[in-house]
Image (cartoon, rainbow, N blue to C red; front, top):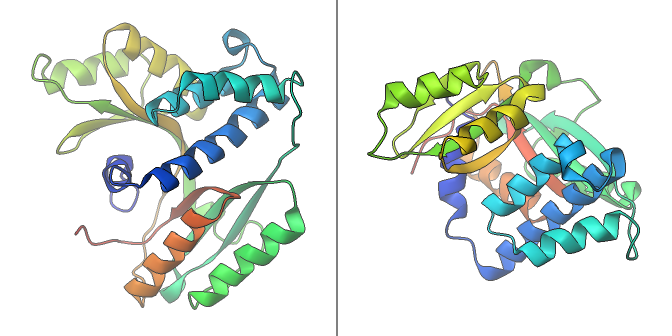
Length: 241
C-alpha cells in the first residue's frame, strides 16, 4: 500500500484553508460537468455522475453547488466545455508521475504542465511512458467505528463485491474493480458505513525514491495549486511526517 494510501491524502487535506477548499470545489465542479456531458444529468442512470456527487459530498461541497454544477453542465445555464487530458512524466530520481487534467484550453495546460515538470528537475514524457506502471482500481475509504469489528467490515466489503481490504490507523481502505466502485459504495452505505472518500485511483505497481524530496514535494504542491489539475498519481516512496 506504500505510496498510494488515500487516507493519508485525506489527512493532509484536513488543514486546507478556505481558499484551498474553494479550489477543490472548483475542480469537483468540473468533474460533475464532464460526468453529465458523457452520461446525462440523471444520477440514477449515470454511475459516473453518482461517483462525482459522492466525491463532492465527501469534500463537504454544499448541495446548492452540486446541483448548480449539474444544471450548468446540462445546458440549463451557461456551460464551459472541458476536455480531459492526461500528462505523464518523471519527477526527480525518475519517479513516475501521472497528472489528470480537465481544461478549456489545452495549449495553456500543456505549457503549464511542462513548466512544472521542468521546474522540479523532472521531465514531461509521451503518452504511455509511465502509465503501464499503474493499475486502475476503485478505492473507498471507510470510517472506523468501535461498533463493528474489522473482520465484519471486511466480510461486508467482500460480499459487496470488493477485491481487497486494508486496515489503516484511522480508517479502512477497500479496493474494487473500477466498474464496481458505485455498486460497492452504495452497498456499504446501505449497511450504515460512512464513506469518507471514493474514486478511481491509479495504484503504482512499482516504487521509486525521489532524488530530491523537497523538489518533488514542491512539484506536487504546484500541481495541486493548478486549477486544471484534477488528480496526481506517483510511485514515490514517501516518508510520513
